[in-house]
Image 1 (spheres, each protein chain N blue to C red):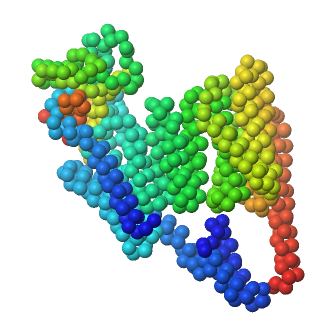
Image 2: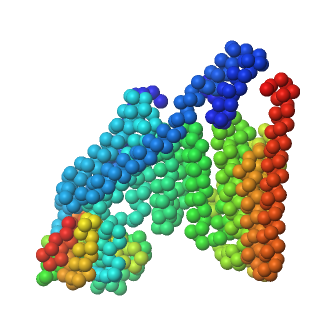
Image 3: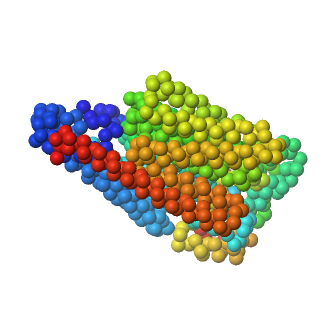
Amino acid sequence: MSKRASLVAFIVAVVIQILILVAVPARKVFTMATGKTVVLKVQPVDPYSILSGYYATLRFDISRIDAFPNARGMSQGFPDGAWFYAIVEKGDEGTWKPISLEHELPADLPDNRAALLGRINHGAIRYGIEEFYIPEAQRHRIAEDLSRNVDKARVEIKVDRSGHTALDRLRIEDRIYE
Amino acid sequence: MTPNQNMSTKFRGALRNELAIWIQKGIVTEETATQLSTAYELDNLRHESTRLLSAVIFTIGGLLLGGGLISFVAANWEGIPTPIKLALLFSALLGLHTVGFWLWHSKNWRRLGHALIFCGCLVFGANIGLVAQIFHISSNWYGGFGVWALGSLVMAWAVRSWIIGVLVLSTSFIWFVGFQSDQEQLASSYPLILAISLLPLAWIICSRVLHAGTLLGIIMAACVLAGYQGSGRQLLFTMAAGGMFMWTLGEFHRASEWRTEFGNITGGLGLGLLAVTAYVWSFHYLWDQLVFGPMRSLWAFLFFSLSIAFSLLMWARGRQGQALLTAGVLLAGGILCASSLLSGASANTSNGEFLFTVTTNLAALILAAIIIGVGLLDERRLAFWLGSLYLVLLILSRFLEYETSLLAKSVAFLACGVTVIIAGISYEKYLRRKAAGLEAHKEEVGYE
């Protein structure tokens, strides 16, 4: 390969690597910038092993299929990998509650409702907001706070018009972790 | 003219020393010696000896540098605002790549430049993980490895790097293992993608490690697919056919003019894979537990067909030297494949397990004889010793597997130990006799 061709190939490779790095968070950045804020109550999965590595594993009311009243009547079932829109509604306490599961994105949702795109995974619904990365220094403090005050733990997420979600921050009473 | 790639540095070093003596003795003229020296690039030998060491040192240095940069950023994670974090990650990536390329092409520091670009690809992978952390991206655990492999593959081709190719092989294989558990149908094309993306690169840059590693990766991926389908006999067939394919391909490389330097490592790994396969399935317990699932691995049939095709090609070319060894390998591989295929038909036969335990043990014994044979014919000490140890391992495994009296076990251990020592002494004597014969021949032609 000539020197010029080597240079061109090298620049193309570096640009592709940069584009990949930009593409990884692109969807989340877009959702964070344009999405509606939704607050979800956190469910404890296993209080003794809530941290795995440097992230906390989170589960929500809306992670359970049976939390949606219309789930039992859905004839096609919930096979692994199937996509659904989880419709949630803002409750009195400020947290959002499960309303229904839909196969299609609803056209007109009122301001107090939002549609979250989720996928069935081993009998639960995953939205891509289940892992909250924690700075090393705060790891033990957050783990302890979560296990002691799990009823008061909330996560703030953003939901864009197409149902994609992005985890914004974790809130336990007035303590905010980003 | 460049030296034949099969000629080792050791051979060229010996040739350089011999040339001086040959000129003195009048065996070759100074003009011929100069021609030989040019043909085998003997003047470059001094530089070459330090190249490997420098490549290793630079690569380790690059790894430490990359690790240091990532740890520095991670250690100060909390105190750094997100835009600065991203700027640091992108700067580290661009800096390593740019400096590496500049050193390689403008300053002629080829190995250091190569090591820095390799380090840049490691930093690229770490950056994927760190970016995912910054934005709390939760995805399949293997997804990051897939994009890491993709970005590194482009760089491996751009700078023609074997070590970045090996990085692509490793990261893409990790991605494949995760992906195939979710998307089995789509994942079944992974061995083909691996072959298309890395084998031509290995061929162009003449990298034995990347070539053999990619072939092994293709076969291992086919084995993962076969094993995941829940059929033990399909896994056996895939491993045996894969081993036969690598051996015959290696022999084909050795016999033909196409990349003869790929021959030894490819054939050796193929033989090793066959030996491991035969040993694992030589246990009666495994045949007892074997799941008689469907035989639908297209890859296994492809490996088998290719090994037959390469054998026929070698036969057509009239290669005689290794014919016995190749016939032996095909026989052992054939026994393993036939055991796998026939085990399905005899699923309801009570003595089927016993029969196939015997056939796989027979295949293992043939392979042990072949490995020892390679050691004797090619005078390769390592092959001889590995073959002997493999044979001993087989015998001892049988004695430990089946209920035998302590006395019988003791006799077996003693017999194996004594046989290995006697065989070793005989082999070393054989090598010494051969060396002494060569010296005597040299003296006859007037060489001191």
